Length: 351
Image 1 (cartoon, helix red, strand yellow):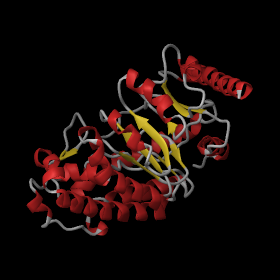
Image 2 (cartoon, helix red, strand yellow):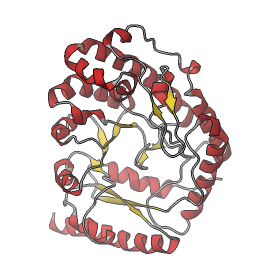
Image 3 (cartoon, rainbow, N blue to C red):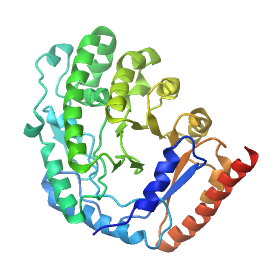
Image 4 (cartoon, rainbow, N blue to C red):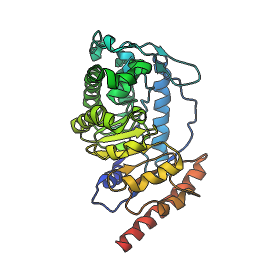
């Protein structure tokens, strides 16, 4: 099955162009028609079948729903995948996401770790799943990125956090050494992934289109100060952004004290924060001049079609709205399209 995505992709490209007057895109999320399988390697057949069914429905939806979403092959995972590749044991509950158990407990343990060869890690089963889905859908089908976290976020899964955070002060070189090992495996994976499935993809969370670049989570920065961010976190984010051309970043930490540091990340294309409404309301004007924002937890008060007029005049925003039924989705799409165009028109008149 193939879908003509050219018109919608062009709308995304225009939004990412800082010189354009386009300020809004919107996606409408309908509930899946069947329960999603757990993120277990043993359920890869069920996961492929589920992702394929979802992709077909997304393609069909394009004919009757005028939003800006794009069909994709859903390769979403848990956070455990890279920690597991280093040898961490994984707990896979039947009612929640899988998670990694720490492998090391002190700086001394870092020296005994080695960067595994990608081909020898459990990560390879993800390529097998994506290969099968791509073979069914065609080589132009977009693939959703697996759950990528920053090297230090992954290191925080490998190293017991009771000791890890102290090590930023007491054993900084060991922290950097582990993060560098993680970065080597992570970039080996990403280089192979992009070579196989193309640079364009759907972000791991939330589901926005990236014509190139990398999307990841940065969730450990809430518990460190700005100096530690600048010394440890910022350099690796800079390297990844420059290596892949751009960065889309999710952060659900209490990290308002790091916002000024976020502005230093080169080519930060999309930012997703998950916080209380009053924090997100402050984020829209703060980041308006620097990046596209998709803060899925809050866009404004009242009905969704009133949100574009509530957002700062210079902010570029991807609005994501849930709908319970196809009819509700169609109504939301029509009203949002009108509201977005009206808000953009008003800005041009006052410019």
